[in-house]
View 1: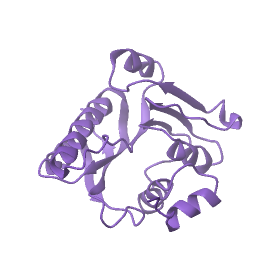
View 2: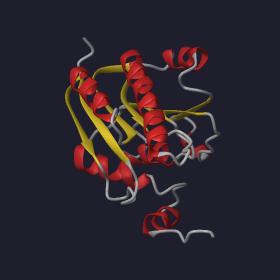
View 3: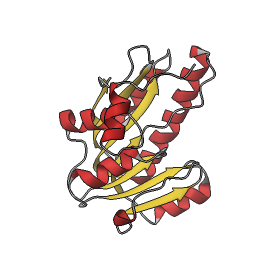
Length: 197
């Protein structure tokens, strides 16, 4: 049986965004100001494009965004001079070589998640592995004093990600936006001011 769109899904559609996840990033940004004007932003797991579009519109086109995903992102052509989309696996060498030419980034955002299996333990571990890889991306491509936002499914390993981020950033913390469904195991880890040591 098809589920009825919830409040956030309807709002996203009304405001011209591709997915309800826009409101998760919007709440993070309004509360923590992780993105500043003129920041170059890497959007990991960018499809269907809501987070990239939000960043492009945030400061009226002052930010550049590079989105990466296995699935295509279709962005309005008015953003052509500010948006670059790379279709591929962000963890592959070829994709990272492409990113190298566009780095460093002041902000890395990752709403990436594994295909869910229905088994909570399996899904949380796969999410943990993705987060480990995103942290490696940050070590390569994040500028000193840059910020990181990553989604993780809570499980026994999740705290290890937060511990690592606390080593790499001046401050790191967990945050669950209101737009995350109550039953969802997802939360977001935020890293502020990358030490780049």
